[in-house]
Image (cartoon, rainbow, N blue to C red):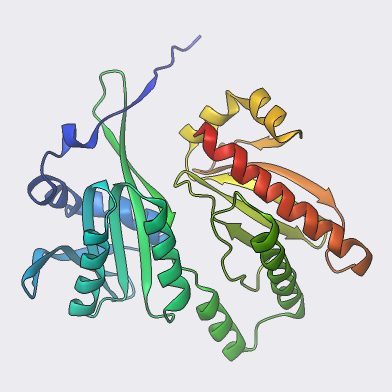
Length: 308
């Protein structure tokens, strides 16, 4: 039998003692900024143009451009989020006319996560604000390995609708899906006490629900061909999935339901899912499916983050 190591989290200040002199300089290296680009751009690229850039009497940590030639401002904070750094990244973005703002932190307060989500939902489709958690892990005596977790990201609903409508490509099915998710959103805001926030739905077959964890999120999905509605806890990396899987019995007991645990071994992400048969377009089934989706998503939001 192959011996397995144990993952240990490493305090960030053991690796980078000073944000500007250590972490910023480390992140600006091509091999490291590429890791961040993979997380926020999904395969796009970031090219650093400067560090410690003057913006009036302040200094932005990193200035970069992405693969679409958009200006990117990165603000680093190896501590818990605070009002000062939120104000700084907005100031730097305005000063540099940036379209992408990336705030990297050790931990995020709920009120700052909500602020980032609010900004993404109330600014136009040219501004994209990310809140990213940085962690470090090692196995035994190995070198620490960084990991970026997305806590909050842009809601591209307006962009998707504008582009698709202009191209005439929004299908009737997608509009029906969007309308159903809007009903879920309305019910969720009234009845779900554990979900952090309900974003504006997009014309697509899935709807992400924020639960206050950078390691995973709840998604409600619609499968029109197989006629079912699904609720899943989607995890960004394998380690938190394995941590949850070890507590499978306790989690299913707390939820009062059996789940489909999908490791997805060929992918970076994993999911834990439950489905309910029914066509959301059927008026006889619609209300029941809507209530089930909201109740299940709220239960997921109550249980899963407590085990991470």
